[in-house]
Amino acid sequence: MEIKGRFDHFNFNVADLEKSIQFYEQALGLKEVKRKCAPDGSFILVYLGDGQTGFTLELTWLRDRTEPYDLGESEYHLCLRVPGDYAQVKAYHQEMGCICYENTDMGLYFISDPDGYWIEILPL
Image (cartoon, rainbow, N blue to C red; front, side, top):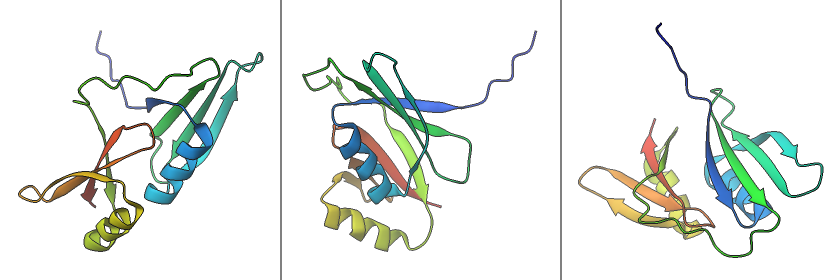
């Protein structure tokens, strides 16, 4: 049997759902495309899309979670390619104060979301 998987979504657990939704919309233009709420209110799943692909970022909010998430050594990340003037996008992220790492030799940088997750930014 040959299985042909395809990417669907990636998940980040978040402490403040509205703050995270606002960050991803402001920093990367991602928009909410779907929402699932537990009948008992114990969790909310919000899926953000880029409007171009079917891939989504799932933000999971857990009502009973009070402490920040332990991100370990942050050796994983999400990567987005951005259209337009890459230097202008980078300047915008600098204004937002969300650039957390830059590798000028490789011509890339990372931004950090409100929970400390890293997102690599590359030109389109």
